[in-house]
Image (cartoon, rainbow, N blue to C red):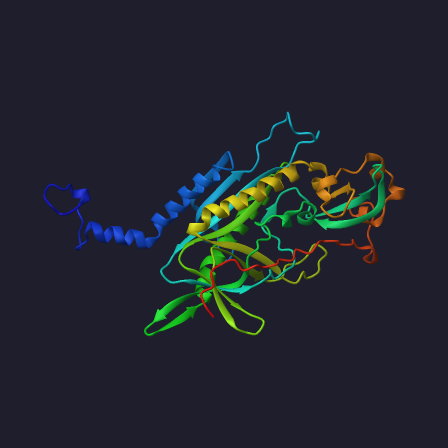
Length: 384
């Protein structure tokens, strides 16, 4: 490519440009990095899933400005194939889809993550879910003879199905409450916080909101549950800042970190202020992306199997089990005679049948297991 006479007019460069300058500008722009991440994702996801669709420059509507924006990559994945020959339930299963919303960032300057050794809530609600599955399920005790008793507890579906057994859902990693970049200003380093945090957090979570709003605006499906995972894939040093109990600051290098964001309060179903909503996204170094995908796939495939095994209990929000610990191992639908006998219905079941009204002193008991995260530092320490 030059201005030589033998070069066609459409290939001639003006204003002193040359091919090497163009290559350097394109490399700095991030488009080659985005293409590389998309290709790597497509290849790695194909090792685990048969139904993988990847779209680059996926557009969403910014809920604040109402402007069309885009994230770098959107992946739509069917988690498990359905085989009627091996599926035992007479009901149609709940199929699981996985959506990855991805931003790609490259920088010579390091990202700095301000870490805590546990999530800001005991049992983090990640990944986000959308579909027919009830958020909470009333689980009635069942004895060895199969008799369902009146005693029951209310479990979040994440506790019920054992989400927190998987490293992807509750990783043995520190959590970041914020992030920044370190940049050199003349002779010293400075930390730029708000702009860096917004440039990653806002596009990812606003794109998640747009996806959820779009799905909700369509015809409701009783057959599909959607798991949504926002990810920033970075080509830059990832450094965590963590303080010891004595107040001493340590720096560690990280291949993967989960960032939390506390959003303004929403109004709960009961009309009461629910406090705050904590949301999450992952930041993954490019070199660790394949491992991250493997960990994600292992979790989502097994969770999807558990979902498909219990369509009735998850759709209706009620079932019985021999234990309230790992209830999914013996979870079964409620017998018809138990559900039809209104005189035996304890208060836990009344929320399922709208003809019975709960009073304030009959509210459900929540027996959610705590998702405590125990951290064992396994990453290089960069010094004290």
